Image (cartoon, rainbow, N blue to C red; front, side):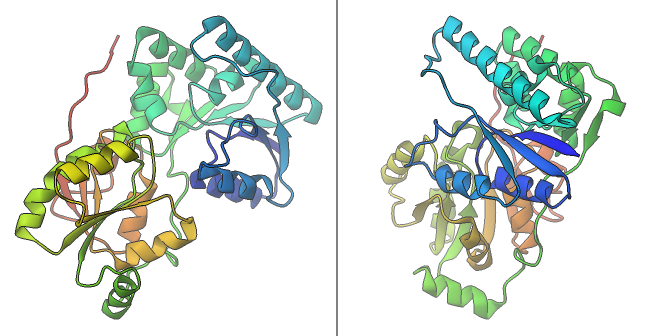
Amino acid sequence: MKIVYIPSFFSIHDYKFISKLMSSGHHIHIIDYFNEELSQEKPEIDIYHKTVALKDLTVHKYKRVKKFDNNNPVLNASRILLKTKFLKKVLKSIKADILHSGWVQSNSLYAALSGFHPLLIMPWGSDILINPHKSKIMYYLSRYILRKADMVYSDSQTINNEVKKIGGIPNEKTVVFPQLGVDIKVFSPSSVEEKHKLKKQYNLENKTILLMTRLLEPNYGIEYFLKSLPIIINKHPAAHAVLISGGSLMNKLKQLTSDLNLSQHVSFKGFIDYNEMPQYFKMSDIYVSSSLTDGSSLSLLEAMSSGLPVVVSDVPSITEWVTDGLNGNIFKRKEERQYHP
């Protein structure tokens, strides 16, 4: 069977998902809309090259005619039509059996406009929980796209409920299943000796490590976590926050850390090689997530698999996994106003 998959981004999540598809025994094709857009300075460039180099994966690279101005509606519409035309050409030339898309307002838009069936859509989180509620146009665009799908599968019941609400689609066209899973042999609890050794290796000896691995973007409420640290450090002077990720708020959050006199208590590690991630989980003492919205968080599941106590915000998708006082602690997140029709 020939499955055409359109990656949402070239993140470690896409790499893992495509690798899993490759093991299915089917012939996997991917539509590469990003090959000319990724900056060599961005961390995803390594994941991109790693993905397109997968053995037996067929990559169809879209070549832009010109650089479009995202603020120009006419040129933006032209870009959408050109990408849809490219997708239709690939689907026809290889005689595809299934079209599989992800992010609702981008690659799933091209998939919906292609008119191809069967179409399987896999929302990622913010494309359902945030984007449709930004405006009336985004809401009804999302509805149009979801209704073109033959099946929509989500990684949490929360997202699934919103998919059915926005799309007005029946239960039999939706399914809930955690998409990526966790390798419990890799993400496993550490011994006291191993934890101590790793802390020493990373120059964090005698520290109580609070680990956060969320993107430094507005959706994840990192500033609220940082603003709470002075209270924590006052009671637990050995507390040290380790933030592993990058994002558009990196400089702003570093400045906030400095303003709060927390520079000695916070380490910004940026993006790291995913293969190094298990070591950070093994040497940490507590996992923290202050996200404002979320699907089933892979990093949360990795933390739980690693045996870490978790302290997380009360995002509905997260509380599907964490029960306050039973397998973690939950705190109230910041509320956001959203559009509802």
